[in-house]
Length: 494
Image (cartoon, rainbow, N blue to C red; front, side, top):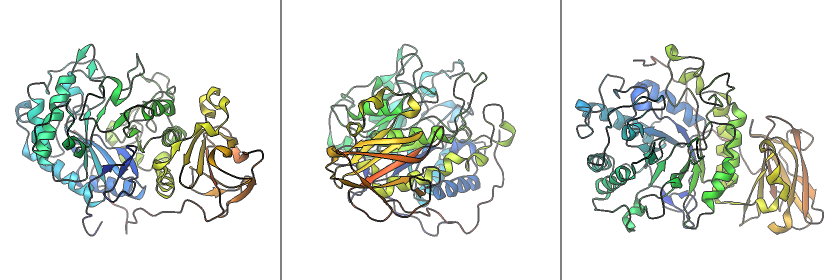
């Protein structure tokens, strides 16, 4: 256990509008997990176990929903307390929310920031993904008051960022729910700042609120961004979330680029990519399942395309699957899934993000051959550049030869390269030997050509190029070293 509570500093948006920082300007490393149903599905000792495992793996953010009916329409916590008395949004049950308070405080104790959704979108639209309809819990008449109540409750918790939406577009099945979400945003503002802010009026107070919107991946149109059905008129939206989704087709590097290139700059990240062990199609008829390679591809593609961070997810973790609930889709319990390969490999992503400060890089596809954009997706190389020290990073999802035009990055006739393996966090030479040293490469006619240690399906590599020789640019990290592994006492099942 952690011996003393960590002081959490309120995050800010960088001066260039691209990523989050601490108050002193130090870039924040956003590596999140989707623990959506934790307040309803995990007992206190299991919550501690979960947080210790994710802390060990390098995660820094938890994405949690306060009111989520997807796994339990009654929205009960593990002691059986319903979230809402008489199913009324304006009579929240103190006993339910006191447990959420505890979870949020425990997250702070372990150093996690929390992206908190006041409600899941199903409560607004009254419609689940199975086609069932329900009475709408959140309406234009009560959204403001609830937003004010929960905002005031957590206004002094610096580690909370806010997210409206909840896997639904604001226009759902032809109905416009934007007035509901605007009311909730204004209520949050009142509860947190004490000021009467309007959704479409710029005000410095909005800049103190970190709010985004979680859209779904709309099958018919491919729309999946916070800004799909909103405009820059919405003063409350401060950063952009993508749901690149769980299919095989989305190219999240293109989705990130579209938002990165917006005229009004805001931080953007892939907040719900393909989850590990999620079916690759829906409904999952004879479906394959996403493995760790898909997890890594979505992560490195999006980061090198301009994301400020990344969110990981697992099919069994987001909904806290228990032993008795395992089935053909959710084949592991949530606690078994915590140690899946893709989750364990996130610590290598964290190390890269942290040591290279990758969120400060700019996308640099201009350094790669133009034909890169026409190749099949699993051969798509993504490049980024640190303007300050001219460090170049290229992600090769299937390995192979990387050709980089280093003249555009201000290089001379020599470059120093490292091949970083995102599967084990180690460095290798081009002939496959583990190394602690850079390889000196000749830059011919301004272009570098480097061959990865191996190539093929699931053999992805990160090429790191620097102008000068030096130590390995990424160091081994220990993010949490518990004296003994936490013990699971009971997995709660309704």
